[in-house]
Image (tube, rainbow, N blue to C red):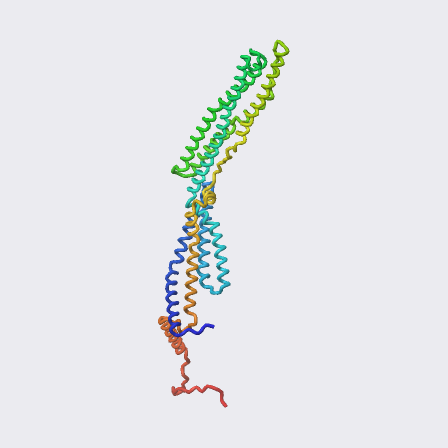
Length: 430
């Protein structure tokens, strides 16, 4: 049990409490106005955020946005007015914990209904531009990857040329008699020339796609350049987003075209056909020995053909197994959604949007601390200790008025026939 305060301590505590009360009274003269200004400012930014979410720009949409922003302003003002009055006034731990829980729940509600819309108004356009810039990067990565895979497929032209050249060299050796021992353009020569012709056609087909790959990549880079320009151009971001969407569709088509231009599947099928579809000519040797030599040479050629086909097919499968270009799809988003999606890039805007709504919480805590100090200063004092000189004068004046009123209502004395006062005897007679 604490000891009673001394007279000096009580006087000092009273003066301290009275000084704090004077400050609080002065602050209360404009606290309501300041809270109203904060609530109105939050409502204005909320209106701008709501307007960015509404597709329609008619009168009904404007009325709905105004109604929502007004409701937010009123809700913020009433909520913090309750807490500014009630939280500092309660002194029990249970009551304060309950009001703290209510303040936390109300703050979450304010952030949900207002703060994110305020952030959309503050940084919505920048967030949408951030979304456009990220989409450009994704498209650039996809375009470069598709072009890389297509070029790797075009490089198979050199593999095809090497195999074709090997068959042409073998056919020249057969023509001079250095292969089967029979000079001329017989059965072995025709088999070798047949496969060389097939590979020549494949090589020509691959070469024809090289300009298509180059043109698609060049056009894609031009579109990307325009898309980058749209992300930083002045003017409303909504109008730029429309053109950006059109360019994104064109660019997606070019990326798909580059995927289709890869020749790896074509080369793989040609390699399979190279060994499987061999038309064996009739052996034209004049003697049985020469025909046996031709047959043996053709068998060796077919073995070499199978090896070359396997090598070519393996190279084609390596290209086909390369990671494909990532799928990219541009999805237009509103300013509010963009602020949430890229919240990490706009921390200052989020901080400002939340602060304008939750700043009164600091005022509530300041008042609660001040009222607690006032109660501590008055602890242990009597009514007489807390009376100011003005209050004492008012009390004395009120006492005089009461006395005057009592004298005014006192009954007049009773007189006899001669006008003399008759003494009134009170009490009961014996």
